[in-house]
Image (cartoon, rainbow over all chains, first blue to last red):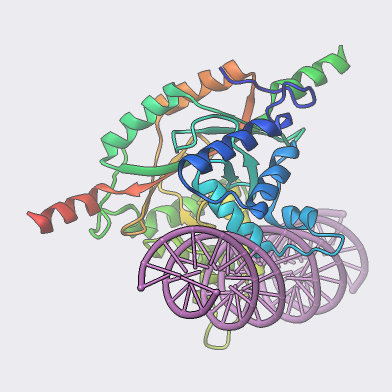
Length: 166
Length: 166
DNA sequence: GTGCGGCTGTTACAGTGTATCACCTCGAAT
DNA sequence: ATTCGAGGTGATACACTGTAACAGCCGCAC
């Protein structure tokens, strides 16, 4: 089950930076990867934000007070983090969000992008997966990766709007 | 039925520029839209190429010999063409392909991007559509648009590789 | 003609991402 | 301890992608 649409409350996915941080620690030590200061800070920044962040936004947040983090360094950290499933890139927004699930690897994800509040929810859908698999098989296409991003209005925003009009 | 994977033959989707051109003519006259020289040339360029083209590639192809087409003009033409379903934007590639189907509007499309030959096939999948609709309904998400792009190896390239190894 | 709207040309600029090289650090090998 | 190599970071420069703003053009309605 995934939690959706709670864009301000504490049960919101993005409001739990600890989860992904702890997961990152574990994952990196398991795989003998370096969870360096920069990588940690980039992940923290992305996790702390409720909304998708651009690489330059991240660089800006990490710079300041005698320190300058160039965008290129952020990109390298993001490459590392996406490679290991700790953050995801949203192609339609050129932005990055923390991974909300445990999956790490690249099972099929669905991103729900709300145009009102900007929150991006992440979920999986076996039904879509099945349908897509059959479709690709018919086409003789062997998939290696895919992106599925839906833009629209999340339940919270729809409910809120309904509330104000009633 | 859609044709897939014929990346070199005459039955390849991208090898029929006339289709989409004729469709564009018809569509524009029906809707009282201006199918101007630039828009036609941009569409021709995209249709003539078997592969996805970037806006700057298009500008380059149209420039030359005493004429300079700026990228910004190409973008405007592409905006028009995508708006009316004559070309599609591939978010994961920042590139554009001609529309292969009659649909014009934004039914759910699936783009199959071959990493070997670079050809992008376009198809639809009611199964995926159904599954996605149910998933979104469960999440309380009202969709307005979506992108679904699959990268992998197309049938033609897979078959070709098998042929050489046998 | 005059005005209006839509299209194009042009320049400038913002945003996104990569290439390259130098330096640093840390651990392994000798 | 020294050397060496690999991976990470800093820094600069640059390529690619996309948009803003303004001016000129053209066709059409009045």
